[in-house]
Length: 194
Figure 1 (cartoon, helix red, strand yellow):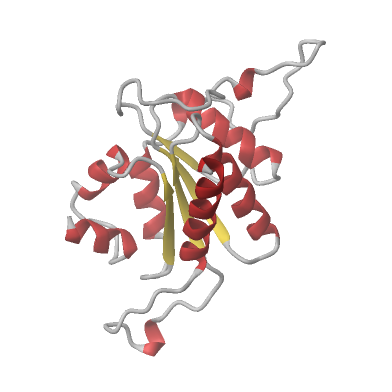
Figure 2 (figure 1 turned 45 degrees about the horizontal axis):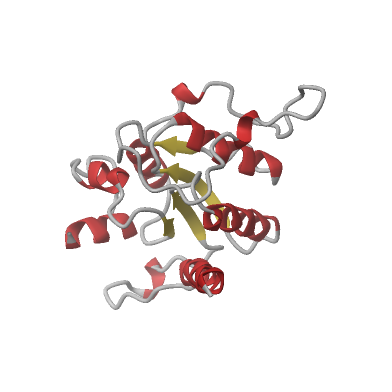
């Protein structure tokens, strides 16, 4: 029963992100009409919903049904970012940028621990999964990646799929900064409401 509920929640989350939102304040000329642009906010490394979502978004990108701009990992540690890198690389999208949190929730609940996915080897000692990122310590903080990605997109054009902690520390850091280079976006609407 729990697996069924998780599956339904996952599908609803992705489909909601792919459904255009309406905003009465936007004129028709300002509405974004291109392929859905998505930033994935994930706590990858502790349950399978993140793996399935990344798989779906990579397949949607291959079908030109959406474009994954970036992955923000809000589970602390480079191991979680490595899991996202393995998934991006495995599905042929190693160029998708990854941001991570460095000072997050300590020892969160882990349902299925696969954070060592990037270190698994075959019987010959060869890594089972390729990676694209050479140095995970060089990845930007999640809030920095949000700012970078949103600054380069049209207003009201980006959807954020969050399968992470309800109040992600990444969001808290992002929303605490002045909007110096970011135009109004879906993220700022959320920040204004907090």
